Image (tube, rainbow, N blue to C red; front, side):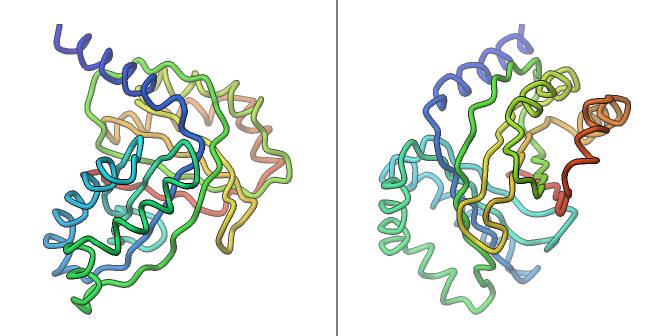
Length: 219
């Protein structure tokens, strides 16, 4: 069936990016009237990053709710940090990047590196990725066992991918970041309804400071 095929594609994608160790997160402030121009440019840049920098995975979209609504967000995944070095070379040679920077319509708000912690996750989803929920927490403990134990709650709600790591650059260095993709806002609601009734989640909230949660509409 179509749903089984889509589920299999999600599983294959997760298998193909099992060697991801780092994410590069870039947030770009963008004038509202320029966003329809910028997004296709970012799409072309994403393809260049995969072809020329060896990015294992590239996603992009814009912040729908949370901090900096309307900002354009780009996520790149690499096995090693030298991939980011190659990405900088791609930026320098990209016509789209040069045009966007010269437009006067955008400004890079931040570019941070995330060290990924491998968390077992088996998606049950059958839809396309439409939303990414980013949650940032301050915790001295990496909480890997705790986060791993709750991954199934997200899978049961229909989450497609589940990534967790520690920020190693930027003003929030040392904070933990959880990124979960969904096919719909209904799936997001289902996940957080389930978490609200989960004693592990309630116990976690007593130990950590949740200092950011954004919803990104993926393109």
